[in-house]
Length: 252
Image (cartoon, rainbow, N blue to C red; front, side, top):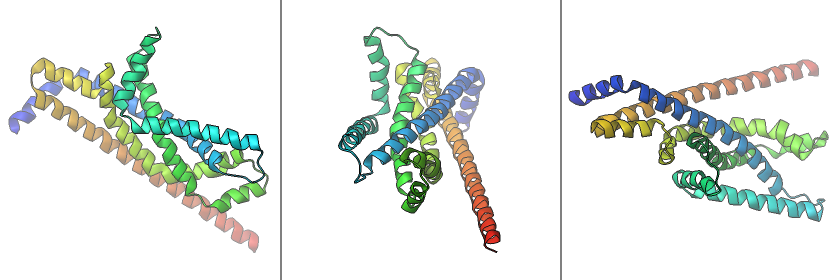
């Protein structure tokens, strides 16, 4: 065990630049993929919630349009949630080459992880939207808000707050799953560990270093997300407390 630790420290000292490069690319892929995926998920989740809602006064063409949009979004979610991200990366990266276009593997990786995350985020946001009391939507509609205004200003902010733990979990998953993008030659952490193992023939120490770094990164991400969640909940509690005080004063 002591020899293993000594070997790990020796490898870290010798290959610290490679490891730092891998860490930086892993963090960029994980964070950007999660943020862009959340934006995709917000749009897709909101559209699905609107399309799934049936209004008796709607025109026939609007009902048909909603069905078509909902079907397309369902296909997107089903494909990207039902296939491995490694396979998606190979198809998207090399598929572009078949059309005579050449693009950087890192950009391809960002596209893959963002679109993949968007499919998961869409379902997370949809569940968050469904958790909102319907009375709030009815109240927004009663003051003249449209469906999109109600979704944007009333429903989505609360859905994001309710879904925050799942969003944080998706960030942790993305940091770990970046290793699958090494198949398209992205030099993230796992790729660098594999390079070190191949150069030194010290396989176990090299991958142990990667495992420890992944553990540190995911633990740090979980800690930050918990702090953000507490801050959001605390801010909202203060808001409602202030609103209650104002109401009581107005009532007097």
